[in-house]
Image (cartoon, rainbow, N blue to C red; front, side, top):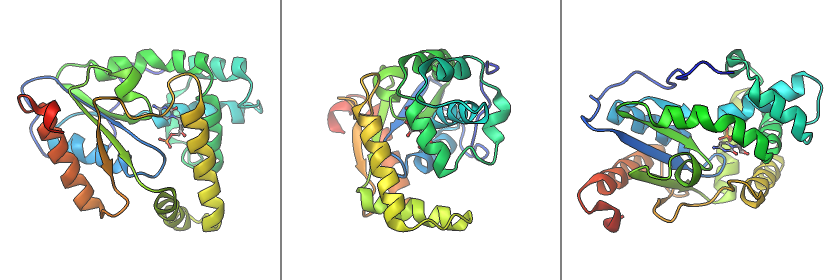
Length: 235
Ligand code: C5P
């Protein structure tokens, strides 16, 4: 099992932490920009950050490395319950093949149950935290004072992921990347347990037409609104 608390990811803190506990939930589909936005918010507010997708990716990777099938709920649950933190640094963690495995194992309720406590503990640490994923605002931290749902059109997201993959030496074509993203969207949104969806009190941030700097500025503005007195109504 993972040591608790998990280490903070992302770049060094550049802003002092607020004197109260601030939990920021950032959800959204693959390649929406939510990870970059979450890391920027963590720096802005001096908070630790957890990319919860890495937990599901590590579970998928453990299953694959053991030669088991991600569809096998018992094997996936066993992997999630006995996860080795070293897998978080594995070069295959962020690959496209592993993303699909992560998406398959994440639909098993026993996998989600096994990974719940470590995410909740991270969210509840003193001072607060930024977590990004699919179910942070709905399941992991439903009382978070600031919630963002970051999205973009499937084609824009596919173009972003395609460019990232090319840089990492993966030359699959744009249409293949788009099909992978759409398959993952369908699986993540369609599962019965903790599906990808915008929490009722989350602010929507569509990054389709925004450069990353503009998206981050918009995200900060939405968080400021959410945490200002009476702010939830303004978002
Ligand atoms: O965020 P990332 O794309 O790395 O996540 C990989 C997969 O892990 C997602 O496609 C999703 O199936 C799963 N996931 C999840 N819940 C989260 C974070 C990720 O089901 N909170």
